[in-house]
Length: 132
Image (cartoon, rainbow, N blue to C red; front, side, top):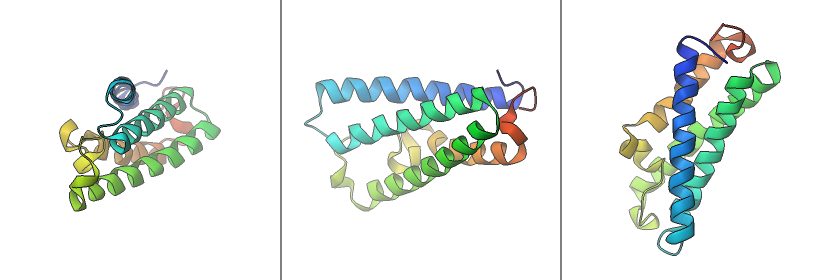
């Protein structure tokens, strides 16, 4: 397990994994017809969060590279969906985790990938063995 500030990053990704997954599973199973795009995008966010969480905990060079790619994809997703929800609100009758750049989650979805990228850049091997 990672230690220090890296532990906080892993904890936040873990919380967002559970939150986004449970929310999207509920919405997909009970209200899919209301806002399918929003609910599928929230499920995608949950999968990305889960992958990053596992990669950060696992450590090692391969996991670090995978986490870097996923953090980049996450940042691109937050920026794309955030801009899309502002430019065409009618496309999203319900919010996603990444709507309005994560405003409904205190912008943490925007801060997480930036923080993750900075952390992964600063810690060789993905923060394993007490470097995190």
